[in-house]
Image (cartoon, rainbow over all chains, first blue to last red; front, side):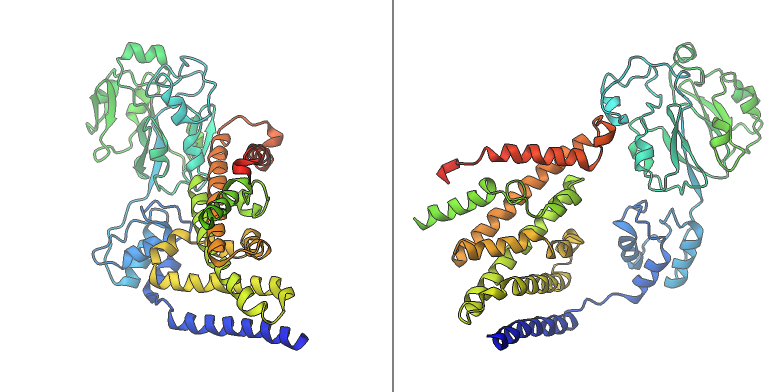
Length: 270
Length: 195
């Protein structure tokens, strides 16, 4: 009995062990060594900003013919260089960008239309009577962007998101999270932003928000390079022409144009 | 008669003796991967797959090897051994021949290996004296019941994640409340078809 049980259990174990070893060898899936090399170079945080299923998915993609190897926003220039070294391919280097929230409507600055007591989520709040803010372009302030950010670069401060430029990798995952499309990626060398998206007339904007763009056009006149234009009552900066001089910032009567000098955008917002 | 018996076995495994909500087996993944409906679906697919194959193989082993040799007491050790190796085997096969399926099941497959629900189903098949056909039907029933329970649970948890839950109950405590309420409602299936 004892012998039998030892034999049977040992036999089954041996059979399966050997079987596994044999089949594992026989059916081993060959992995391209280049793929592993690329995977090691990639940051490994699986943020998905490249549009593929994690870093492993992108490593496979890189090996394909005509693949765009410059898609890793998180790794930036360094990683793209390393990948192009591994593959012997040239790549277009992507410029470092940072997410910018185009609204300054803190609690009290942008007026509420009603008190929202539903699910604390921007998309949900946006569905109810076009949101709880007077301005339909205003940040709703429930922090949906903060929750999706894989790097913890967004924090909520008095009802608007503040982006930490040190932590922001420019992946753009927060962009679709905002139901009002207030977040845009802007190259880091551009420092002047018109932080408003309102297309209402100036009088209406003043009623709704203290820091909205009223479309007065003073910035258009003062800009030495002609980089600012008015479109639908809203000042829009053409970034190719802007030289970050900051003259428009001084002129703007509602302080809706902002010059971000610091490396971290926290300072100018506080 | 045989068919009615099979339907009875299926419904009993599916609702009346639901593996998660009535038997309270396999609770670790029930709480672990039920944060999102998508991951709970992935888990249930893996359970379905592993449960079917594991019960078939363990049934064969018990009836064709252990019973003739009068070594029934070895079943716990053998079943654990067999199920673990079987999942490994399936993983290798899938990686080679169905890479897409392998990617979809991904991490859930090795997770299922050590799940008590799988082992329990193998034992129930022996305890209830199921034939091979009944074993397969029973495994499908349990796996489908598992899917129903975990997907319902994940859907509720997705909703609750957005609700204003009292501070002390956030996260797992409220999940246990939900699970017990669901279990109570599944008790309502007791006596269905006189089973």
